[in-house]
Picture 1: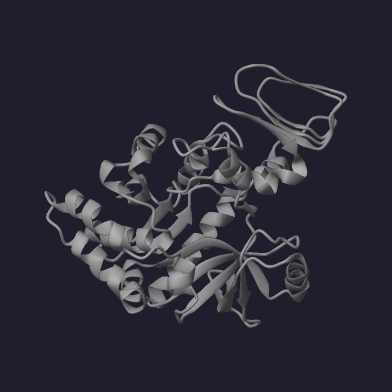
Picture 2: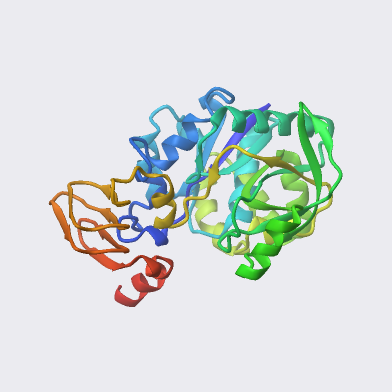
Amino acid sequence: MLCALIMAGGRGERFWPLSTDEKPKQFLKLLGEETMIQMTVNRLRDLIPIERIFIVTGEKYKALVKEQLPGIPDRNIIIEPIGRNTAPCITLSAFQIEKYYKDATIAVLPSDHLIRNEDEFRNVIASAEGFIKDNEEAIVTLGMKPDRAETGYGYIKCAKTASIVSGLKIKEVEMFVEKPNLETAERYLKNGDFLWNGGMFVWKATNILRLTEKYLKSTFDILKAIASSSEADYEKRLKEYYERVENVSIDYAIMEKAEDIFVIPSEFGWDDVGTWYSIERYRDKDKNNNVCIGNIININSKNNIIVGNNKPVIISGLQDIFVVESDDVILIGKKEDIKNIKEIKRTVL
């Protein structure tokens, strides 16, 4: 039984000031008329019915999830009382999903990625599910074929040989690699055995729990105690116990240690939409290569990213800058400083 778990607890600090702690980027319309989380759910609907799509998020975002995804059943909104990175939230969710679907295979997906070829994406997920049916202790990750030397992504080194599953290649994972410097990224690109790590995994719920117990025993025991609570005691025990779990990513806690990890090299137009540079890559541009979102007037300006709110924004004679207007803040800077937005935010707030 294929289910989806969408992780929607991030704060999206690199999209500040538009993305805030109260309304982070997964709830924003950054690439069109749908929010990022709406895009994520809607691309799954032809493969997984809404009753088997689960969202894990923070308590403060529950109302936003219900507002933007009115078809999601209340039981499918899994609440983290406090952020503890991806390993605890995935395991907490696996316990919950297993209550409803004992034989669940779970596609764990971020809530804020772009996928342009959605048919191919669904084909890859379905192929991964088929592989897991025959290999219940395996993990299948989706690795994207790189088209540039990208230093902002982690990488997966895969074996040269491949098997064929439902017409797609699947390879053993040799290792996961942290974000590289430019020289290393260029070497990975030429090598051909490295894929971008998109943070998407398909595996059995029972396997998630088995591996968490093996590699994060104390966290597993805490989450098991929460999951075994009566319905009346669940929320109280969740709030009381959850802060005791380890603050650790699924990559570090399990993926870098587990055996039987495989990757499907994928080409479905993926981007993790990590910074305003991503918006520049995919938003329409005017004749002077400006990205303009909102009521923007450009006069002799080029190569800018301008995101307005309510008032007209007039840019005259400027080049290679970005402007982001929210209800409370207007941020203006050189495009080369987009990579420093998190630090800028922490400096002024």
